[in-house]
Image (tube, rainbow, N blue to C red):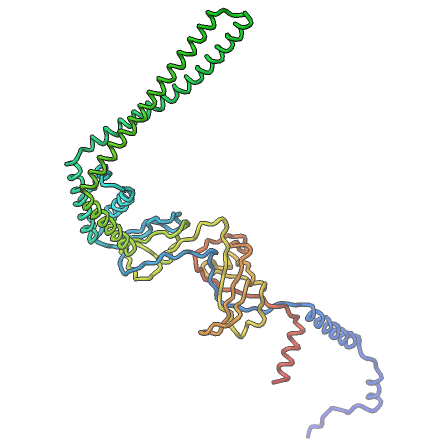
Length: 432
């Protein structure tokens, strides 16, 4: 049997081990560990960083786009604007397919605006209404107005011709020009009379001083009386011109009154037909023609092409109002469970989904407001962000806004130290 070669240490050898001091590595190694631990704790107390709350948001401009609402189902016949086009209030932006020719409807709109200023049947002789027009259901109302207009013109032609009225207007204008010339001449004669009167008084004074002769005084008096006589004659001619203008105006008024009286019933019928046609055109425009409701810039909410179907109450496009300064805002729903650490003026960053942050950077933001009550459907709080640098990113790149553009918001909450977070985890585990 093999006997082991191991021999137990003697008591003297054991005492020798305990008497020998520890080596330098063991001594300094312990010190190093303690120092490193203290440094770690110090750094953990000094190093602070915030928690992050992430939520989806949408970016829009303030004031927001004004929606242009489509009122009925239909398909697009024409789009008159492009994305970013400037428009004025009342400009046509989109047309739905209908039986009405748009060019004819545009003419009808313009001629109705002109006819709105017609306040007497006699003035209808100055206008010729175009025909035929492709107006669909509006065509019947236009035909009625057309026929009544022709009937009024025919009845007026039986009473007198438009040439008579033109002649009266020409005579009145001629008399008014004559009156203006006579007024100028009268003022000149008044100045001449004043000068002649002053000269006469001067010669009379010189005669008293024996510095002028009686002949010179008589000549001066003759000139004064001559100017005075010419002035009176000029006043008479001016009075005759005024009387002639009044006479011609009276003849014109009487002629118009007789003609309008003869066609009064037709005129009232024409006015009613005009209002019916105007209302029919407005109804067609409200249903088939979308117009700009304010000045600004067009923005499309979806792709719009000829033949694209639209439904009633759909909002295919809108108008960014023309303002001196555009403010950008972002809004989203802050979850109820994470809302306690978020406050007004909290810093945030927005990563726009259409512009990846690795290439374009992020938008700087801050919490502008938080709703005081939760929403009923999801229990979240509506939070609004302000973008102090607009759409300029952290990479100094300005992105192009598309209304309701989606982004991912990261809200930075209050900073906490790493040491505090470690103790928080320890307390949490102890409680559990």
